[in-house]
Image (cartoon, rainbow, N blue to C red):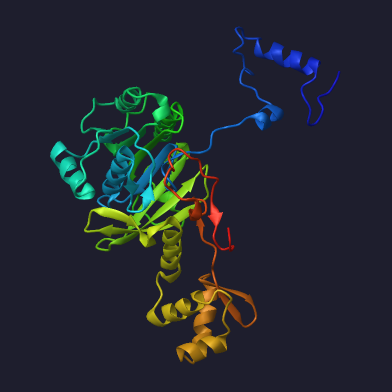
Length: 380
């Protein structure tokens, strides 16, 4: 029997065997009906990844988790109004041309939505492409979202929002585990987004109270929802503080962490005015967490010297005779690096799910982004 060349087309004998296997169950829809080969995959030209909110909410199913009353709904409404108007999200991210938005704000009323929208938009009118519902039929969230998306042609790539999933989660079917229900519902939401090229669905969900070193573990409930989502965002903020972080992880882009600020208790704004600056600020927040004033002073000195410092340089600059102890503790905790004896350098790797910002962000919902950039390397 002839064999298939390593990188060549299928030979006639193998093609016939696959054809027979595909048609064994009738009508060309057998077990191997969707089988592809590497050369077929290599020849495809897929459209680039699209974003509803560049760098934060890509196409597909995105889960936004956070503690109750932390500001998730304000962030979701900000995204919705920006996308519907073709405006700017979280203060600085241009989302590109206007697209239809279908938001299920199930914990709000018309009055509250109007008040919140006007506070976010200031003098601008509420955009007509912003569609919303505050009530839906019990157990019909998936059908409602499908009906909304059917209102516009697929090429407009609608943006859907569910706030919150806990308000409308369909019940488990007989014999189904909670994990099975979560994964089934999450997969159905993903399917709605995937059926309209470039579309996105953002689902708001609460986090659990337990602390974890992995922010994905903070998503409330089973792992079924997080496992079915294309992207998971966790919004974190300490009570009575205005600064928070957006932790983003995705199947399509690398993990990123952005610092954001809550202005006047309503509007989330990207810290520093760009994704790269917000990522750098988030890195600073993480590096300085739980440190005392003198340790922070030493950390700031090292972080301001990219090429590294010696203990003697730090001691002279800071007039701190015990600076060596602080440097060693910071290195032991991973807050700074000690690449060789007598030299301490900052942790400089900052990743973001945006490309180099010199390329701009103005048409993010129509242009795909090539992926994350490591800004620790110059001129990238």
